[in-house]
Image (cartoon, rainbow over all chains, first blue to last red; front, side, top):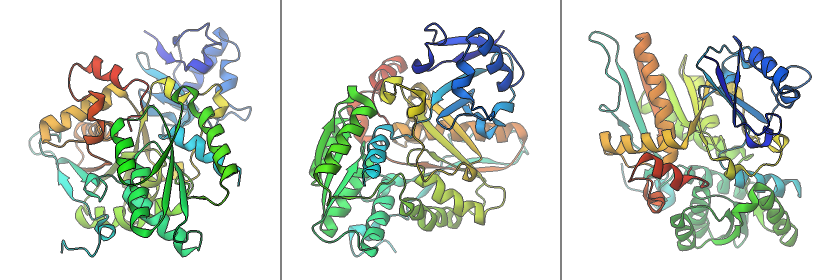
Length: 105
Length: 321
């Protein structure tokens, strides 16, 4: 068994188009390091040089946001699913528009 | 007292309803684990957004930003626009909504009925197209007023001043509060109040996970985090996919006779998860979750009937929350 990592469309250029890849490790940090060895550059899109998750990236272990589970130190085990998603407000569309509007004022 | 001087005065004070059939069974002698639903569909236009709309309009009036006859511009995928249109009608403003094409037909009809004007943005263009359209409108109409619900503190304050106190009044033993995460106003306002009043309270967010088409992002750096959002208010955050949201939406009406929108199905999914954890741990729990709206506006999706797979594909590419 391994840890399934679901990759968003905008990062699939790193995984040869694969929607999901297998990773290994005891923490999210381990898994991302493991993946970076197979898919160079992927980790750099998710983690800042300071070693924290990028502001606009959300990562979930079994549908729960890792920022509330210890972030990169979040524990994972075989059979878990890690989902990577761009951070977008529920009303993504409206928010994008509003952000644009407020920036023009 | 259930008499009000006007529809606006009838905003809030929504019922908190026990869900004994949906609540998980506990072993004999173990502390109770109970689920409660706060029915925001009972607000004047049928959604939680009436609270935010009313508070944002009042705040803008008090600040002198909004005067009779002014036009309010609001990019919205639904409920906020409907609430604002009602409030605007009663207080003498015009409302223009910018919205994506891929929202349910009921929402469009409701907005028009309440008197809002609608400008559609093509769904295919995603957020980039919305940004372009909105920028253009703002340039053409510099006098239009934007309430900006994602960064407007009156949105969160509505819940700090009403939703939170109502919950503590009706359920002093509350241990968990679960709500959907969009503008984050409901969770930030209610969450802050509950944290001040209830020791050890858990504040749990359930965010809808749409199909990727909906996001329309080209780059991971194009994400959006609402200005109102402060992660410190939350204790946990769940991402709920379309399938789980539909499954729970159906379960809630089947088991408890409560007809809710899909976002509330997603919230119920997270509420059930924490309720089951409490049972496992042998802990008492009173889990209150927020029903943002009822299911009426989503009937045309067809996702209340048929197989789960059909429902999932019917909602694919739609903003169901």
